[in-house]
Every structure is written in C-alpha cells, then in structure tokens.
Image (tube, rainbow, N blue to C red; front, side, top):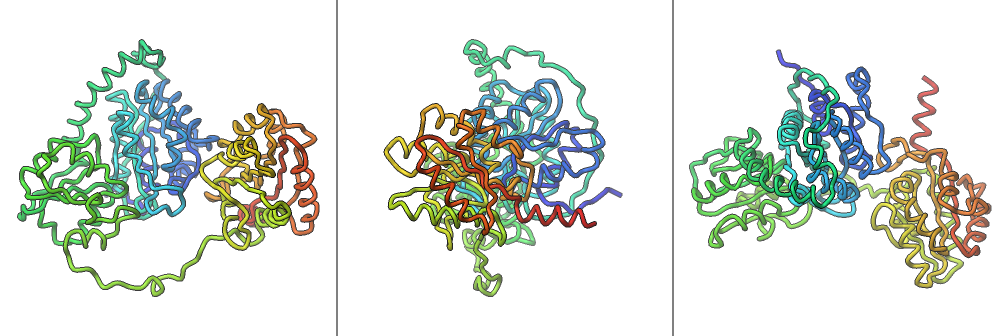
Length: 532
C-alpha cells in the first residue's frame, strides 16, 4: 500500500526534493514560497541528514550558495517568490552559462493578482531568457514527482532547472502518494571546469553548446511525462492549458473535455505538439496562469491565419488570477450562479497588529514630519509598508527591497530636506546595506530609520540575518557612531523618539535611528513556548 500524505503544493515540492537526495535548501522568505523551506527545516529527514536549511540574507546570496553546492556535486535547491528572482537574476542568468554539476533546482512562486506582491511578473520569461528548462506542476502530486525529475534532468544536461509555482498551487492541499528517499550525492567535481569561469573565451564556447542543447531540451519536453496530448471528438477547438489552469479547464468538464487538449508542464515549448494540435483543430484557446507566455510563443510558431484566443485577445482576463468561472466564460459555457462577495466573506483590509512596534515608530515619525512642509518618507518592503494606510499615511514611496535608502539619497542630492528612509531589519540586511554605504561615501543628508522587530515579520517570523548586530553593521559601513541612535518604540517613549528624530534631521549627514522592539507575534509565541 503506497504511503499518502495531505500536503500543500509547497510541502509536496519540498518533500519531493528531500526524497530526491537534497543536500541543501537556500532561500529568503517570500510569500507564497516560504513554506517550502519551513517544511524542510522541520522535517526529521533533514535533521537526520544535517541538510543545510538556514535562511540566506537575500535571493542572490541563496542562488550563489546553491551554485557552490552544485559545483561540488551535491543536489541543491533555491526557493524564492517571483520578485526575488529579480534580486537573484545576475547569478541565475549566468548559471545557465556555468551550468550545473550536482542537480540544481530553482523554485520560484509567482503571485498572480498580487496578493502580497508589487507586480504580477511571470517567471517563465526568465527561464526562456536564460536558456534554462522550466517545469510548472498542475497538481500537488506533480509537484512531488516533478522536482525529482527536475534534479535528474539537471544532472543529465548539466544545467539548472527552474520550477514555477503560482499562489493557488503553492497554498492549496491535496493527497500525495510518496515514495522512499534517495541517498545524497557524494562530493565530486565538474569534468568541464572551464565553463565555470565566465571569461569571454570560455563563455563563447559554452554559449554555443547551450544553444545546441536547446533543441535536445525541447525534444525532452515533447516526450515529457508531464506534457500530455489528449484527443477530443470536437475538432473545432483545440486547447493548450498549463499548470493549475489545466485544473480549471477540467473542472468545467468533469466527464471529460470534448476538445483536444495539450497540457504543458515542461518547457521549452514543445513546438511539435503545438503544431500537431493546430493541424488538427480549427482554432486554439490558450489557458495559462500569469502573463501570455505560451500565447505569445505559439503566435510565433504557427501561421498568422491560425485563430488563437486567450489573454491577449480578451477571452481571458489580461490581469489577475484565473478561476474556473473565468475559464468557463472563455469556453462559451453558461456561467454558474454568482454570489456577491459580501455573502462569502467580510472584507478585512490589512493593518499593523495591535501592539506592534512599527505603530509607535510611525506615530512619532508622522508627528515630526508634519513639522516640515515638504518632508518626505521613502519606505520599503515589509510589515511597515502598511504605514501607508490609515491612520498613519506615513510614507510616500515603496518600490522594491532596499529602495528606501537609495531613493532618499537621490532625493537628498536633488535638494529634498528632510529626506527620511524607513526600512526593516531584515530588509536592511537583504539589500539596504549597500545603499547605506553609498550614503556614507556620498555624504548624503538623510535620516535612516531601521525599524527593528528582531525577525522577518511579514512572512511569519523567520530569523533575520542582522539580529543583534545592526549598530555594528552601520558603524562598520561608516556611519558616525554618535549618530546611530537606539530607542524602544513604546507610547511612554514617544517624546524621546520625537526628540531623537528632530536632532538627527537637523544633523547634516547620514544618521541612523533604530527603534527596536520584538514583533508582537513572535513575542507571543516565545512566551507561549516558555509556559509549556
């Protein structure tokens, strides 16, 4: 009798990686990818084998650490959300050129509809851009099976592999049949060591072989067990569906789809299967979660006269997540009876937790900034981004990880005063430190507030890389220790916080204020653990 477990998509992928002989997972927390690493961190097999499972400072360092583990022959996995791949892009794109030795799988969880993200970017474009094969599971079972196949493919072709999840796949549960764990790889070294040194002469040779391998990888996609062509009696329409969108299609045809369907879960795009579908059917409907990646590619493969429908033509929404109902509309089926949102769930807008130290920081900050007619606050990615909402309305910008400090620098150089930056402790060590170094080197007239809650609060309380060392880091970067100020953000200390803010705004140069108090959620968990 096979073993079965009820698993999230994230958990199924994590368990599949463990059973594939994983030696290390490298990640920075980001919804909806966080649970992959957390599952490995808590799994008995990871403890038994002493698998590396600590959080990295950011996605770029995670990618490079995993690449190092692959170089010495071990199987490694990198996990991040889609915007994290922007941070890791330098290493990720170049990893296509270096290749892999031990299996290397890069897992990216995209967030259509932007539930907790700045944009809806589709990571499949990165795979295509870097000439790296990509997998996209449609079910939790596929997530478990596919990651093991991905490690094997990575070692067979000596190339990293990208695995793309989306929010609904990552965070929904299903029963998964599981197998036994494979042993870890022994230490070994690449036979073709030259390609790991990306000097132009080496890279030119490698680039030619990478392009040659592309045709072989496309044939792998044609023959892949995860790409499937199902015949249907009604040839007026052919359907291409990928990832979780395939499930939405099949939900609308519980007795079986009447049209031919090409399910795609492994890339490069299997053009041979696409052409076969087009030759068989009158027109095509392409159903995919995210941006029209397949739709654009198919338009380049097929004759211009072929009618192709999908997100680009409006049959499916151009933005946001797909649903079974939106797919139903594209299929020309009668819609299900709709329920008003108010009948399903009461809206609950996000807000800073009651008792959160960020609240006390913002209360003091907004009172001081109001004293300056043109005061501007550049903020960053974290719980404290909610300071944009009522009742604080405390921040003016939020673009990407680390941008608060560097945007404040640019504004200050343009004559803005005061120019304040608000950043969290985890985001500071993720990508704020280099901006602070710029500020010191350039003598920027800015005030930086590192709101330190001693954890990575936005994603559930993971370890923060700079905990207990922020003052030393700032001093080491070159901030004058006399202008590194620490305060406890509590209502009773509000006047002290306001006084410190006024003093540092008046100082011409770089100053850092660190309001430090533990996240109210992790404090509750720590207190509960002590009382057990």
